[in-house]
Length: 127
Image (cartoon, one colour):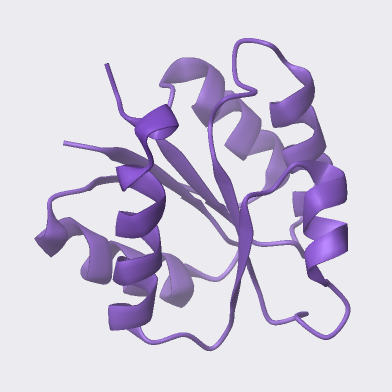
């Protein structure tokens, strides 16, 4: 079972992600701000982080930079989950080390498909 951390300040988005991913066999952890996200990652290394960009206490971009700068967490894939897709292009995602961007609003089927594809990558397999 894969552990996925969803970080979003909107409870409805976290609930939607949970409803989409848990039936597919994922264990979903939640955080509502950037500081809590880093604490959750330290406490329980997820297999994947779905990370909103506009977060209280620390931006999602800074959270991603910190995940990638820490050698203990650098290999955790991060997908940016954002409604700011116009402002965040692939280059900006690459700059902070994210593996991709999922635009809000998103369909649960598309989210599940993108997460499954990311977790199937050989370098991302959980040991």
